[in-house]
Image (cartoon, rainbow over the protein chains, first blue to last red):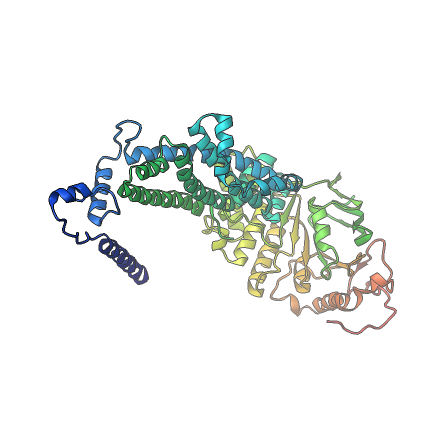
Length: 277
Length: 290
């Protein structure tokens, strides 16, 4: 580890410590005004242990440990472990994202190869791209009539655009020289597509996929809040209805970590196909 | 009948012609360089020979067959090496070899590629990516790739333009050695007069574009094998060199305006030799532009 990264790590820890200190200070139990009698306090509801409100660090740690100790329990539709909820979300994202790859990469290839097709489809892409994926939700629910598949559709529709545009751009901007080499070597179209164009455009395609996975993970939380049932987004909303902020905060943390891991995974893939010119 | 024949070749963009009425032929095993200022259409001629561009008029016949589209019979070394950066030096060559002989097994491809990597002096750099190679080494891979498919003709588009003088010298020597050993037919574009005299058997001089033509074909009367270190001690070297430089500096622009007659077939000139015809008449004394 270099000196700078060591310093950076120490500084990160310091920031974390500072943040935790502020949290701790802000959630210190306030000096309660002495109630005239126990009975009066009970009437005001002050005697009971508070379960709502912003949690202290201790409460937070306790809940987090509880979730981590038993992440996969299933006690009915409204009480499932965090890992199960996360699994549902990941499955939806995975399905929608995979469909998007299967659709966007081949289509992007075609668009990138054919300037005519590019020009013809560009207006549609430009109009459809800026639509918030959640705006499709009513339409999806009406036509598909299944909330879980509608969620997958929403993930599909939001991941498809960056991949489509990046694939088309990557394919269209493959260096003429490489194509000329393939031409002079009489390389067959299919081999040209897989051995020249695909590796040449791969870094750009992967950039699109990395943007897509980020958006998909942002959208799944919102989509699940809307359709309910299962998933990490539903979990957040459900805990909000239970007024259990501790669980909400824990879920937020899990969403962040998972999003980072997804980005890292695609980033690793991107690095593997990137070449230096 | 000559190995390669080019008849009445022209390339137009709209009404403007880059070049027109280009006629020349090449024999098997001949090394021909073409020299001319930028914009005269040298690269276009090479691309037409390669099948990457189409002529507006005229035909190219190689080995009794008309050139229509790219073919593995003609290997191209590109100006900017055009190596695929995600492939190693070896894989760049094997990509070409597999295109030429799709039925070969892995061992055959490997042995063949290694032979040509060794030939250009890249033993030990097989698994390096182009980004890890120097400019000269990259161009060597490009040359090995073109030689490896054993084409009937090799087309070189200013292959050493981006290299420093020392590297250029070494690779020129290597090219000369490989061509002598394989009797390769080569058509090469260059800007470098000395390079042309060292490598070429015949040097085609192109007038300035647009409306360029091949004005002269200069025979290299220096005996083979030519050696880069001793060639300039031969007085004949300077006669040829002066003739070429004089053409590029003074005469190359006279063909557009009609001050010099456009030959239907470029006359063969042998500068300094007794039987040399006088150079094309110049009707006006012009100042040096360069």
